[in-house]
Length: 362
Length: 73
Ligand code: SF4
Image (spheres, rainbow over the protein chains, first blue to last red):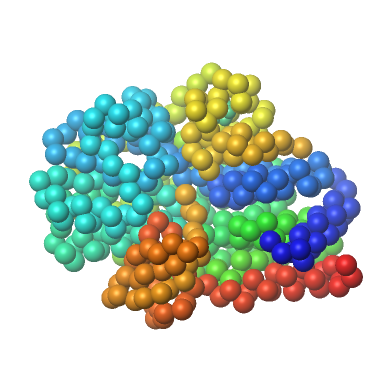
């Protein structure tokens, strides 16, 4: 960061702090924002009147234990390898985690890119590779591309077990169904890279809450918070803003959106700690069902609600009702080495971010 | 998990490209991007380029902040 940028940030912070007269709650929907806000110490710079609360945008945190159980059940089948991004390894289902399975010698591999699995499937025809397809719209087109490549190359030993979620229904749920009190929203920049601004416009138009699509540098975040504060205070009219224009165009990425539409369909799914949200899932559509691991291996997702251990507050943290330090376990019984809940297990979870960077909530 | 990082395209090879990510060379998939050229900047998420970026637009942030604050130090 240049000296000029530092000066601008500090000046903007001073101006924000001076202008905010009463308590306000701003939700950062995305787990990466939670991480960055805590890493940059932004909460500590701002007046205690501004409460930055986390949202449901940490895909690993909102993945139901029944999904982890389904992945573990796959490992009991012959010639099945489960491939995943590293984030999911330590998340617990009701019968343990993929990490424990791996340590016990089961075939669990972690990859950097979905495409890595394509090469493995080609060179190990005797194994069936199941990719744990977790994520939001940012990641969904990558899985869609993988499946299209598999089809093009005639690969028949590669499948997806999908737990893909859509952001817009989750935002609707928070602002409308849950009635959690939110005065402004920082919208997830990298979801918007794919979707464009369309899914986020209802926040201002329908719910009349200031909203900004925000990047991930400290200047992006401070600038966006200052815009929100001005609108919340009534200094400026409520108007949707995109401060991440260097990455996010109004229409998003048309090629990626086309792929999502080609391969997936919209359905309902349960979010860990939150419950069922209508139209919030992307699952393989009938044209691609031969790649659906649920169908190929006869798996069911148990819809049992997550049982949160000993007072874990993840469910409330994920909709901005509570902050990590309101949980009695935070930092004592629950730490990144011994996580009790998904918000501490995932590095993008609010609890892990607060623990790591000392994000004392004001 | 939705993290994406900027990279510079060094070489293009059909649906893949070699990019420079903070000094490290990596192969990425470019299926999601139309009309990619050597020298373009892209955001990379889990081994795929997910869009092209316009670095000049970062100045938009700085300029707007300057305007909001006035130009005095
Ligand atoms: S600190 Fe641990 S137990 Fe408490 S809410 Fe966070 S993850 Fe759950």
